[in-house]
Length: 168
Image (cartoon, helix red, strand yellow):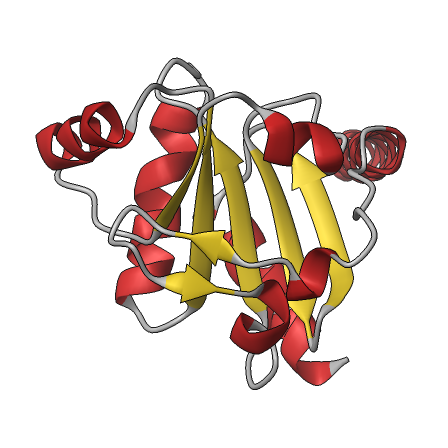
């Protein structure tokens, strides 16, 4: 009985390591490429606020969240991003090809979500970052890309990435 349990535990650990390695390889393969001068390019939120990524990530790490209203996986990730922002983490979201500002604002209101949003109506901003998958999350610290991932990510996965950026 004990030997069976050990074997299952060993196989479980091996499976988890294999899964983590596969996820790391996929993230590396799909990693967005930061465009030149991305940190100083002005962006405008739905509220009309002018921001730059360098300024937002100077003091604390910044989570940039590329999402879309039509993205099925974003349904699960978006509430966790809003939760992080509500808990005081720096978050900037970019709505990819999700309509005009009013459409996005109505969608956010209907879902009860509040976070800063930059509208990427025609996808130009996302193309400049080479974003091919939604959702995509990027962590910036002091204007430098620290971490990227795409696809579903848990609340704790996002929190760990932000925590890692704070200590590195």
